[in-house]
Image (tube, rainbow, N blue to C red; front, side, top):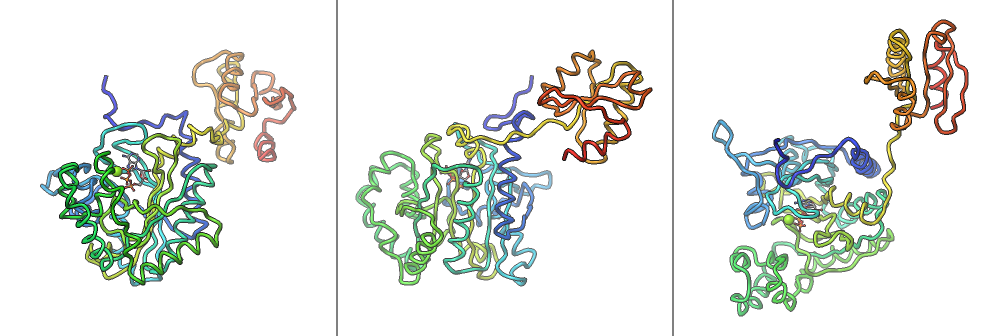
Length: 418
Ligand code: ATP
Ligand code: MG
């Protein structure tokens, strides 16, 4: 037997309704916020992620699925959704059109990580991207879109944490202060953080190692080093969150995974799914489009991990609305009536009524049992008498009541039930 690759999961037909529910909530949210879907390839040139995610990030350093294709090009399966969307924005000249460009995506993403609860090698993200708007209202709108999405799923027990990591100018001042603080502790930190110290010291704050966390607990805070503009921007974001009735906590340690984040960063975190508690993360990345060769276009967005959301919903008893069975099951007693049942099912489906019939040669009694198991709302049993008289009985499964209906009139009858 060939097994599924480590860190991946099948969505079985019996569970697909959970995904449909989440995807519908994602699309519904995007529609409410006037965001249109963007679809980009599952793989891109590796270079895109080196530049668009950043070569000091865990994603690029450790987690990418990179391989050479038959034409000797370096290809990478997308580890996240922003870089592809940004590439497409530039390549398709969207910046010259109406701004802002508001987009969303639902994608599989691939990261070579150590699989555990809420951490997979193939996982799925719902994300949004708003390009062209520099003001704090765009940040707030993106945060509200994430909150609306979580709310639509029925998720209540998540906390919104926000922070600002400033712009290039204030970050430089902060990095210097952070390095001064960390320098005497370098020997106590992990080897990755010692490397980060020169390349991107801010990322040390994101380290999950206990010994590094101990050191960074007393580190200077980025928000104390914001320049006037970044400070004002962050304050306005907070005012807008409050105006819209969203509670938040300032967490000075959020720095986010990508290199090109600027100003606002945020996370929605749950305490109900163990260590991998971040269900949604986002922020502003005003430097990204330029980094990828475009003009200066401010940008803000988020990505939510769909498997973690499902886990959270399951762990906290949030109900997924179950998809219902077919409108009608058409049972046949013999060869002739089975053929008639098949024909009627085809006709009903062409009129938008979901219909099912037997494919396993079951007895009439077993067909009724099966219809009940698959949640059919009605059953029609056909035999010689019914075909001859042109009339059948429609049994309503919820209460067992029956009603005589002309076989020719079944379409109209079930349409009337919709
Ligand atoms: P983490 O700190 O948990 O590794 P991250 O900062 O790498 O998260 P992002 O790149 O911001 O995550 O991705 C956005 C969201 O995608 C995360 O908040 C999480 O819900 C989800 N996610 C990230 N990596 C995985 C993974 N390997 N498996 C499942 N979901 C993931
Ligand atoms: Mg990660």
